[in-house]
Length: 201
Image (tube, rainbow, N blue to C red):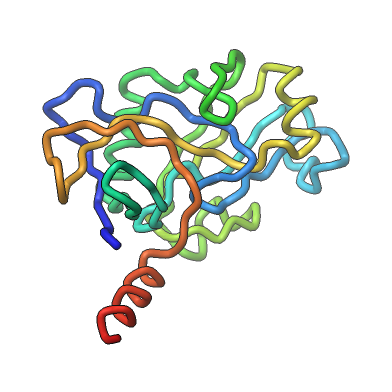
């Protein structure tokens, strides 16, 4: 099965991330931590007044299963692409673009904090129990939409972030942009191991 790296096509203005979606099954397999005054969330005391979701937005070298006209394959993003995508998202002023399950546009959600993990031990993500690799794009999203908070966050209907946007397929179609919405993922090393075993048979 093919493993394809997706990259930013810097010659195309539409290339990059359009929105952050809150979803039940995040592609990167990393849930967010909800910070609020409600007791359902154990980290409530960290920020008692604000309704904030904190979690991984994009993890480098994490493979994502896709199916298309030519069959099944996996995609992934390098550390460099994750870094560039995070910078472009903010420099283009898209921090208020959000959706629910990649289906419905949402109002009142804003990316208020963004950083790349640089240290395995001393990163802020560790304070919240998020054990993500170096190079991960982390974000804190303020939820100024009480309906979304009450109906989706408090009820645990959404558990993490997922990105959507346009990227170029480095291996197959370097100049063709593909709109990607994340789906189920597994580690790239595991896939390579499986492919290696299949080749030996």
